[in-house]
Image 1 (cartoon, rainbow, N blue to C red):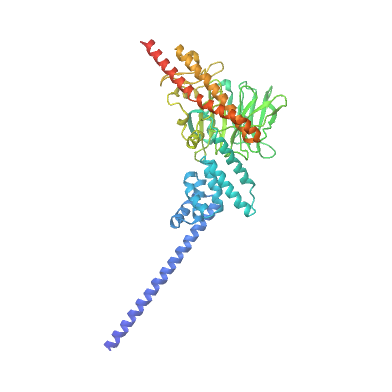
Image 2: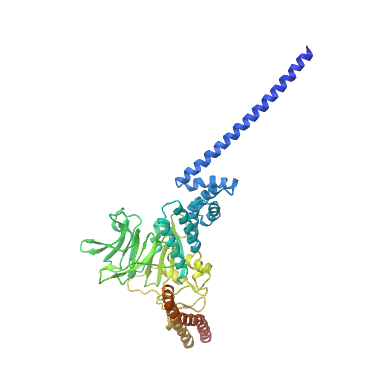
Length: 495
């Protein structure tokens, strides 16, 4: 009986162990399957957020999937788009490249936009061309992306000719409070919001400019086509009236007008479909004979960028200018740049793309500044209120002598030797600017001319290029001589 009972007990123990093992295996399978279902559910949720534009919510989920499968094209594409849409443009590039290599179609488009926003326009052109080719093969609409391709090609052209502008200060503000950074002299007019001027809310975000006489107002509001257009009104006996639409011949929303004291030159911003980013800055003039505005001219870099650029303002009394941009800024923020306008445009003389990008992007405004110039007085002047009749800074040029002294007119230079040397430098700079313009025009003619026309221009182009190369270093050498002569003169007469 004892033996029989013992055998039964052993068989029972073995059965229980086998049963427990099976239960553990089953439990593990259930847990594993449940985990897979949970993971799948999380991915589906992330994809749903992605489709709804909730990129911040979807991003950590895609990041986890990219980590687990670093070569998966879809995971990398989704994660790269989330980074792009939340402002990490450079971070997005790595993942979108994986998507592109895995032939994820939309990775090409987003990668092209990454190149646009990082001023690598030639790479953007190639990527847009590849994207358009893929769309065409699938008989999908290519028209919107041909417009973006044209914008990238325009970016290539603009980057080759970046204007040399001294940007002396910048301030980051809330996008809806940019006007707080503009302090105009009374003779330059007034800026205010549409809401404050008209006491109405039907054009949120619109800006009103009132001229220096206070009898003309320029502003933007939606028209019957739901697009924002520029308008003007005149000051009448009983208030404002006689509203007129200003037909600027752009196809986007128009806003942010500013009119120079001549009453005919107007700066404004438009989200024209061919713009590099959102809003681009334009200039046009009113033709009094035809009573219409000339076709607007898009400003170059650094004023325009692959981001939103707007609210260009010149203050002739202060000798200063402002413009706003959301380049490299988080959502809802804008940067207002303070710069010194020049009567004659000059361009950054470099063939190095990195240097051109630095000047064009203004990621660091120091690259545009003269290291010997102290800009503190100019920056302080930008924040001063100047009533009618009071002068700002009289300025013909900017000639830094040392950390404490900057001359703006020839009369300020005390040494006659220094004055003569600097006058020679000014004359040479004018000659160089004229020669550059001449070369630019001839290059355009050469590019589009026939064989005989090209042959006739070759000798002239070579001569002018050689002359330009010879002249370019001379103004800086004369300025250095003039500076040294002025410093010696001051030291001698300060004893």
